Length: 223
Image (cartoon, rainbow, N blue to C red; front, top):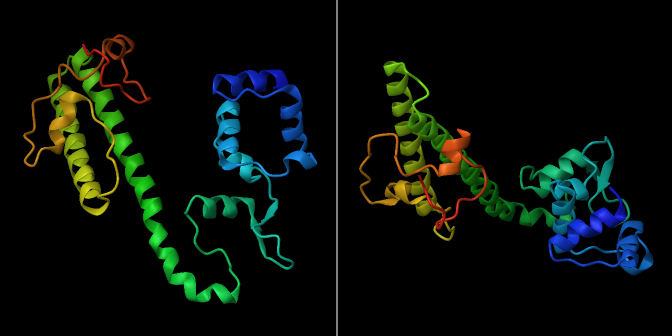
């Protein structure tokens, strides 16, 4: 990608850089030795890669020094990436930090939150796909239809349990918003409807035969 193309993408994200400023960042000149985390996120978005790909050379077997101190142990780029994401808490630390080891357990819930949200989104997306297929009536086999109706109900039940767990154990977490026809899952005693839900999928989703993967907006009309 040319510098001009990258500047155009960054401008679309609200960051207008001059040619000299971008060249200074990319060359690591003395004027820009440090990049704020917010800038890393913008570069990653513009380059269409996860931010972690700009922080660690995960595609190589390079080792990464996590501290500038002389004699500081290095780890593989892959392990450094896992540590950064909260999935590897066994990074060797100086002996002086030993009394703090128990505190790192407090951060395990960060990984749990991310995992729960990924599971939540997967349940919602898969339900949307099943509901879309049922709405379109692509299967003429009655038994197959009944199977997918039951599967839709299982996904909804799993979604109910997932959201209950997050409300109980992660009370400060703002739960992802659900489309209006599915909001009954948050009722104290949710009543399972019959499937498919006729007003769940949007007209575009029914036209394409699959649910969208991006965030759904409350003001978007449904079919």
